[in-house]
Image (cartoon, rainbow, N blue to C red; front, side, top):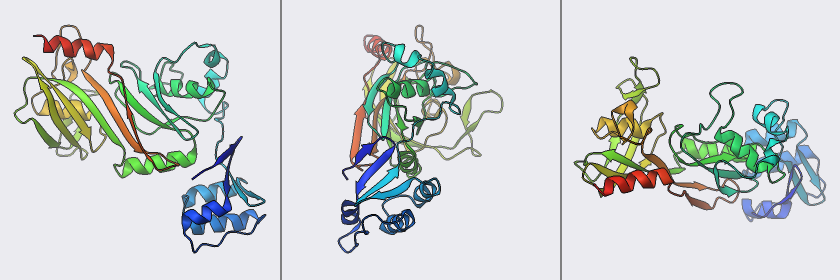
Amino acid sequence: MNYERSGEWLKLSAETLASFAGSAVRVIEAGSHPHHVRQWLLALGLFPEKWLNRLFSVGGIRMEGSSILLRTFIAADASSDAIFRTLSQGDAVAGASLKAGLLYYDDWCLVMDKPAGMPVHPSAPGQRGTLDEEAARAGLLRGDGLPAKHIHRLDDDTAGPVLYARNELAQLRLDEAMREKAIGRQYVALVQGTLKRSRGTINEPIGKDRHSNGRRRVSPQGDHAITHYETIAVYKRASLVRVWLETGRTHQIRVHMSHLGHPLVGDTLYGGSDSKLRHQALRGEQLTFRHPWTNEETILSAFEPDWFTEVRERYASL
């Protein structure tokens, strides 16, 4: 559906909205009162009721002629958002480049390519150098102060794409897609040894390890967790596997592969080891999602990091 952005406002043709809802829907009268506009929009069923009601409560719905205006693109409030408060002091524009890759960017969402070693979000107040900060900076470098809210996360030492919503409507739709398992996350890992089966599914619940802070384990009392995998290549001492997540538990791939007896190379927390690599050999390879506005399938692939290429080629040459 075509739209026009006018500052904070999403501008849509009432006739276009009616046509998307169905041929039998009447077009609302030009210049209608915001209350009637809200009622009409609710009847169309094109937008979340929660979002429309909140917009109406703050004067975020109006009609100009035959156009519907919805206050959608609201800049982050630096007084309440710690990341934007820090970046608004000037260092966002002063930086020559982002410290993380930018795979996708528009009014609705963005996708950052997180490097290994960078946390997605702060673990303590005032922490700098997070991917959330880089996502906010990506907008500010373009003169756009829309918020950036991560839809999913990666472990600090896992590289790969992370999806962000840039307005409330996008966040509602992408959060729902996550709940419905409609966002595809594909990973590549180097695991120790050779798997008995070249492909399979691990359906084992994951919970906290009472004996080791920060560690997870397969446990009957844990949360439902499903991981799918297939072997890409087999080396003398390791295997390269592609992995898909059906759920998103903390350390899920690491725990499940260790449970099979094939911990990730370099993952000392779960029984892996490597003479040179100091973290798990795991990277996000591809992210698939429906765009929160157009509903078009979006498939984004991340570049293989140099460190992953080095460890993969090293094991391949043994």
